[in-house]
Length: 158
Image 1 (tube, rainbow, N blue to C red):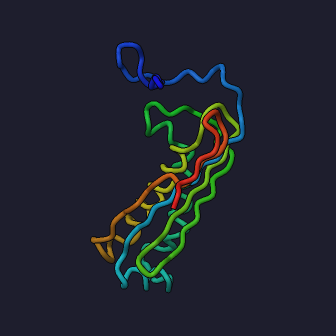
Image 2: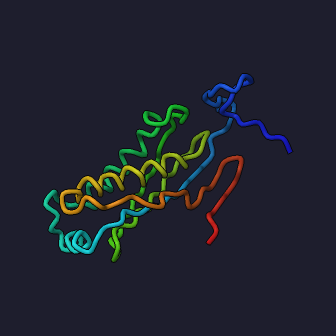
Image 3: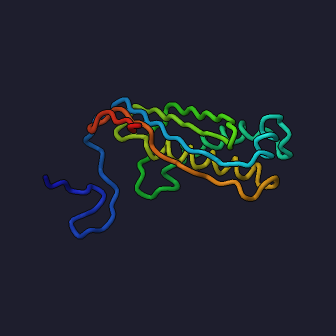
């Protein structure tokens, strides 16, 4: 099976894929990630005693804004209508788990938007708690599922 990588031209140069002829379809993608924190940061998050304010609210808004700005950050990403973004953050015993789901009815998928939302939400958490613990770290940012489009549905196994 020979498959052409559509982001390269005949000379092997990067190019933006032309999606003009594609019909808009409903598409969604979910990504996840974690910010690993020590017990003192987790305690401050749970009690609401982080000096910079409401960490989860700031991270949620940062993730939503990031999803909408993905084409500004990734040079080959298309400008599409981001029709829905949900960013969920949960405090766990070892940090914060982040999940983002992005939805559209457009000509290309929203996997990069979901991954960008999680990544920037994680960066916002780090920014908000770095004064309490400089050793916090972002881990395991990954695509969990996508639906719609030519390639159909996909879900991470395990």
